[in-house]
Image 1 (tube, rainbow, N blue to C red):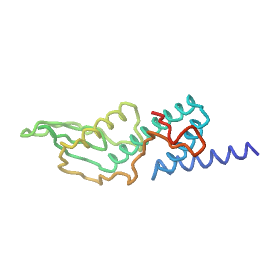
Image 2 (cartoon, rainbow, N blue to C red):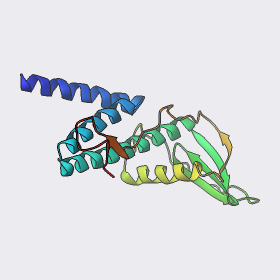
Image 3 (cartoon, one colour):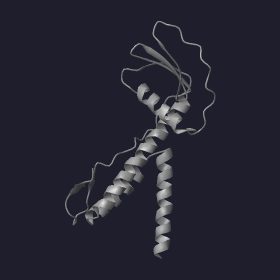
Image 4 (cartoon, helix red, strand yellow):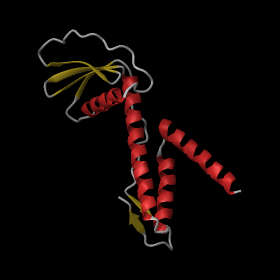
Length: 173
């Protein structure tokens, strides 16, 4: 029976993970928070810390995946910041030039896949994303749709323990 419960738990966790990728990550975060509270309540702090660190890595990966997909949907974006205009195509920097000068002639890098083909491609898209969402960046044109998932990836800063445990809350940061 324990094996069946474990299998059912893994099946449910897989569904929560898939929902987190394509929709709302809050139920998955809540399941992890419950596990953290249980571990901390049983004074299994090292396991709780590993669980917390695992959530941080997963939430970081979910954020980067969302940014990648958003940049793919945006198509060609032309933006300006600090006197520099940049043309970005599906998360890749195609060209950059100073305001008041002409756009340089460059060869187009070609199509992009559903997921980054290399870590370098993923890192470039992440840096491009950070540049685009900076408050001083002005979006000049977008060929596609620039829209983020409605649910932010939540963090786990502290976990409330259930009554009867070591205290009202335990910080696991």
